[in-house]
Length: 425
Image 1 (cartoon, helix red, strand yellow):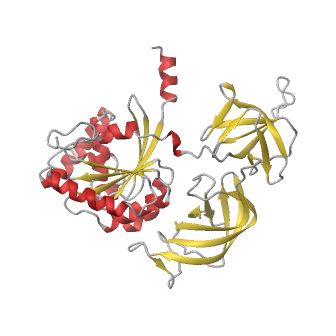
Image 2 (cartoon, one colour):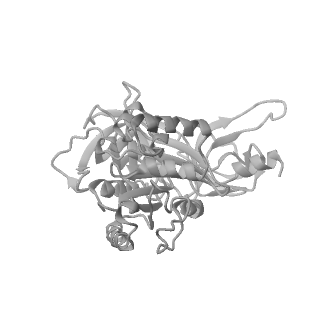
Image 3 (spheres, helix red, strand yellow):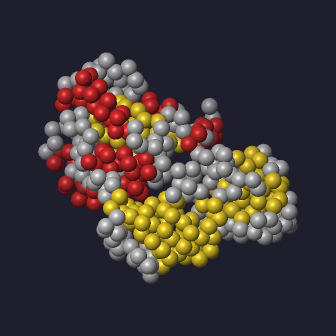
């Protein structure tokens, strides 16, 4: 195969984004280090660096967790604080890993890492079972609409690779996870430290007949994770070259947020409500007959309609909610508490508006996951349900239906800091 063909086949490969979660010391960073090491995705100089760091710390063996724990404070304390992203590929699929922290005070970091994930790996210590953080991270993964969850029952080496321990824990997790909205939930017994069932099958757990973790990641079906029913195309830019080659070219560029657009389809532009038909769908590689989420394309229409950045192209008979009053779950990301009557900037798809907080319905007790109706002060890492009113209508879907059009961020206009991640209810 030529180098050009190899490069194209690599670019065309599926991309799976996954996040790791779980309680502190459940072995998240070790698992990622083991996966990268056993799949031969570590450079020699990286390996030498963590060998030296492990020796300096006095570890008995090479500490693979150091591959992702890059901050000095993380290495000193042996914990993950910030979200660490790692990239690797196998012949079947490309991967982006978000290694997220387990501590309660870094809930916002966990949400940041999980917000774009197709899949969540939640680690459970075989000795301790379901802990508070296991429940919390499972709930957050479900709330964020992550379509697939894999419970990795880790540290099986510390329970003598017992099938009974695994089966009891699996039954407990099945009962617990039945309350979540996630439909695809799987269970794998592993030892991240020794690599059992991570990349290679474990000889010590021959009673387990399922696939290894990497095999599962390579083969989990993600093509249907995007909403291919509701057509949503937020316009990011209007392309008008006005050159000798393209004197009358007028295209609307953006990333498809949902559905399938085809040449000849009748569409509607929001907020104007004007209708037209798709004349052509352009990409860097030429025209397409159809395009779908999450492709980036330029759409040309048969009629001259006034469309600009922030507008949305949809189907005539399938429109999002066009509203100024929005109810959402928010995760507060800022040191400065939420101002109950405050004004904030809103970034939703390609739209920028301003809003006012109308009401704080309740705060979620992050330990019990119950609604707290008494204390409505929203501080960093808190999750709450709020109502806002925007200065102009937004085109939104429920987050559970479309993660792109159902999410937005709040921005403090004084500091320009992003203060909240929001999910439309």
